[in-house]
Amino acid sequence: EPEVTQTPSHQVTQMGQEVILRCVPISNHLYFYWYRQILGQKVEFLVSFYNNEISEKSEIFDDQFSVERPDGSNFTLKIRSTKLEDSAMYFCASSVNFGDYGYTFGSGTRLTVV
Amino acid sequence: QQQVKQSPQSLIVQKGGISIINCAYENTAFDYFPWYQQFPGKGPALLIAIRPDVSEKKEGRFTISFNKSAKQFSLHIMDSQPGDSATYFCAARGLSGSARQLTFGSGTQLTVLP
Image (cartoon, rainbow over the protein chains, first blue to last red):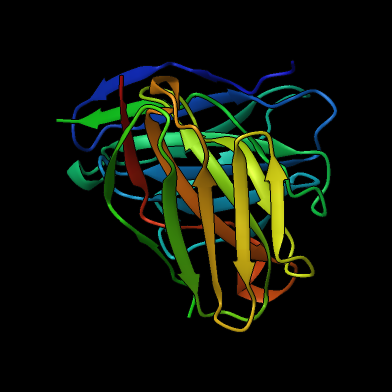
């Protein structure tokens, strides 16, 4: 079964540093998403991406965040200057089209900001 | 209005018993209600989903009951097994406006005792 692949699985970074989280969505999927889950809390929407631009973003997705699809396979989330409260599990997801309700989530990247 | 409220926070069930998790929503723009299963260190995986034009959907041991007038839906796991031990999230989304992205409940940690 096709998978959404995320790397790294765990990243530790110093506060104020930039991090890039990487995702390889399922190859025929056109819509891409980032969600995050702070430890013990619910999964929260960050951003959706289609046709090389952001479709929607939440209040969490401020100027410190950016997304990019640098080539035909990768989808990245960059946090410019990490804060302690950015520590969370970050999940990438993809879907064939917007009307496709069945998102496929990756296994996540655990980001720890120290 | 975007919230999805989920209960209980944790649930312990004996093997063979019925696990019931409840969710309630407020936004009438929601028209798709999935349940996700999450094992430790993994991303949420779609378990079963329902649209509001039906009151019940069953897939194997998993059943969603949906009450549109009450704006409530629930997951029933029949003959619960230790392998069902995981965190379960209800979610909701619609097709327009701010409801377009998945809104998750807070999660229920299910433990099925052998």
